[in-house]
Length: 157
Image (cartoon, rainbow, N blue to C red; front, side, top):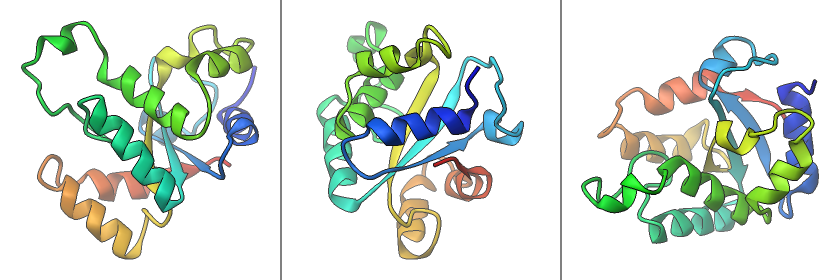
């Protein structure tokens, strides 16, 4: 069985662009072992132009790039998962199709793509000006989001 570190290294190896992979959420708080929890929260850290591309992909799909949707009352969300569309935007941005991730990691978990919850953030998101800008943006939705994310995120690869 692969560890989260091995998973991250495989993602970095097949990515078409340079990325860093962080684990956060309950898996990071538990130590990032080989848990069978249903949710694996991942941050892809991207260079600014790729981050902007990811944001645009999310916006075109009607999503905020980290949390929520722009029109929560739309019936569209009864048929489509925001998490799935955000994952697809993240994977497309790094040059992969969801099927490629499924194929690469089938030996680890058969339905890995259903367990991943991927967001992308720009390089430097954990500190300085980028951190302050993101914190200001997210503080309206969740005042502690960036603080908690920066504190608990574990660099995997």
